[in-house]
Image (cartoon, rainbow, N blue to C red; front, side, top):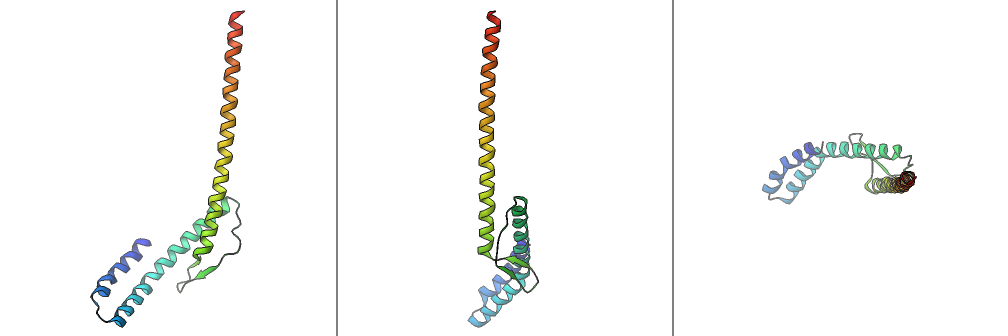
Length: 128
């Protein structure tokens, strides 16, 4: 979708660059925006739903967000709301990894102690 939107925008670049009249240039730019906006809206909707799915898997309630709907019925969160949900997901992932690292540290510490105990028991057993 992103590539298609960029192709459409690129197709209009030469027309904008060659146009001398400011009004005609603005008309071409608005037509370029109109032609590519369907793809940009679909991409924004895809990103929103992908992020909300990540939030659901982490049991995060994104709260109230400002939803936008474009002319092609694409419904997506605005940039501020999307950034807030993203920060919640990042924070939840950080907490999860901190917990996992603490558990791994405890396990490694326990295994080191267990191995030391076994070495001591083997040493005592060989002396007898």
